[in-house]
View 1 (tube, rainbow, N blue to C red):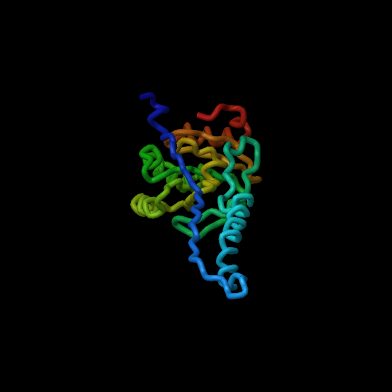
View 2: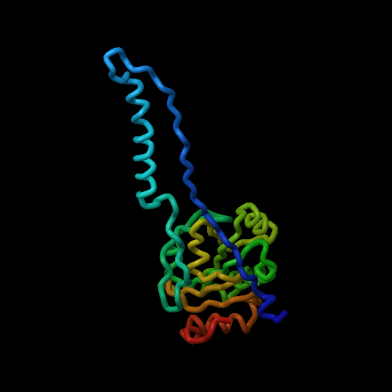
Length: 228
């Protein structure tokens, strides 16, 4: 296995939401007619119920489906484009709008507790966040765990200090717009909320090479460079 193949994990997750409608048959017992030849009221009501049920069923079939949520964007936000605002659910802190991080450069790392390369690079992100070189940036994490408890357990065991949030289905909004088809993925966002660069695979983010990579990206040199 190549180095790049071993440093990221493909997310091959199929999420299905089948919708089914089951019609229940209605049964009615016969009732004798009255002496003047007219059916009793209870019989008229009983005979009208199947027609009402059929009309209601046809209405359900003709009506547009509104229960299923709209699908999330199929492609990530492109480099140079502004990330849409999303209220992110907190893992080790309160929820917070993504737009509240505007005003200073932002580094977003997308991970999962079951992802070995993600766990491997987590400590270097902490070191970057607390280093002098990293002090000019805000570093946050986004978990794509299906199990919130698993994500929280990992954060506690890793003694995480930076803010982490978690994405959730069925839309998986953050996962889609950040381009997390494989993880880990790290997205650099400028002070105006524009995507500057997207890097796939684990690395030592506190190394001199990675710090230079970040600085070049935010300086504008990384916009035309291919994502790793």
